[in-house]
Image (cartoon, rainbow, N blue to C red; front, side, top):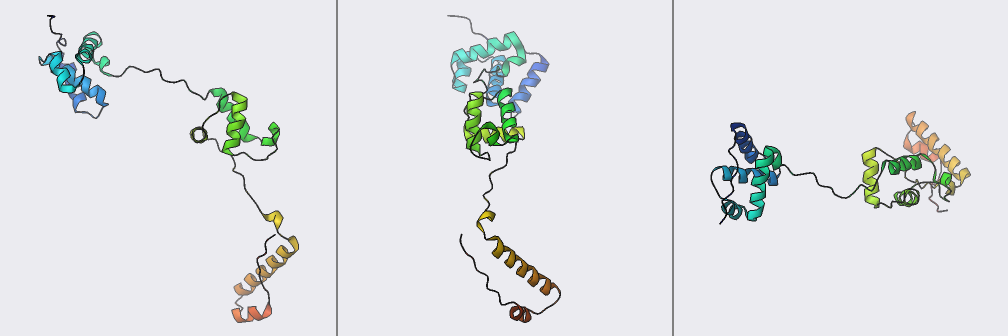
Length: 198
């Protein structure tokens, strides 16, 4: 049977920091490791600690060995590699360039960007097709704003009719501001406002 492994003798500073970590609201994994170290310093064996925490004995032994080698630094998580970023500096530069220009400058038949159009354009330019929601978040994070298309209907109205009704409305506003009673206004202007569809 092998000899039990315990944590090395803690300095006062280490013990104080471990106690502070245990009481803190740090990451649960860091707190758990700190508690394992403190229990080991109090004479608890690795199998007992593993049973208390519901982890394997190997996990407890690894935590103790790492602490014995590196001290308090071993309690923190090691950096993880993770997935590489999809958006590069080049992608962001292309995005900024695109929103500053009209889509027609790039040969598209439309004159305004939508999120989906930007996404497709950047997919062709940079070779990376992002989720529209992620593209929107990226734009917000980078402070990039594009103008959403405005659907105006001014070109659908009859200019003569519009100008005539606008003049009547101005007349009514001016007359009212001068104190002309409403009953007089209705007899002065026998106007029928209608809403017509183009």
